[in-house]
Length: 168
Image (cartoon, rainbow, N blue to C red; front, side, top):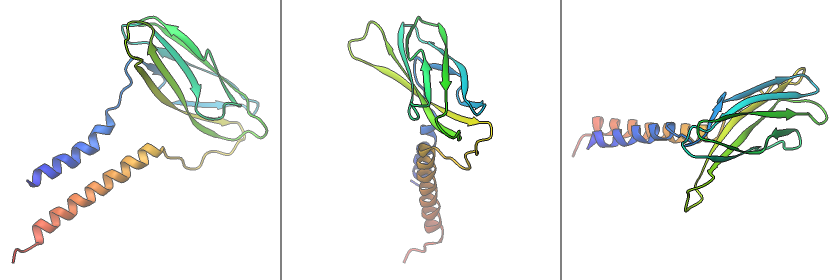
């Protein structure tokens, strides 16, 4: 019985680490953009690794007045890839920005239900002369870390209780 609790705790910690989005491949997987104070452009690749034709949509989660994507929507054949351009123009004083770039893919044909796949690509933008982001942490990472620490604490507490508790 002791080992079952340990197996459950380890499983809960490991399972969230294996999240994949079917049908989308982005290169690079994290976008770190360094630009001059007036902004500029950044290019990356999206590939359709699936066996079906898919329609892709790409958009920033925040700072839509500063970040524009070209093209925003496009179709890719199976195995095909396309270059995407981010046009970044700061408004007012340039400062370091952090957001996600969302990439959503859905099959063009052959689906009785509207299944979609999506990715959130971390996007960090820094401008020459702008202050750096001091400390950032993804909310999902913080939640997983917190839950993991609670589970580990409970497992250690239960183990110590079993080891040092003397039955009456």
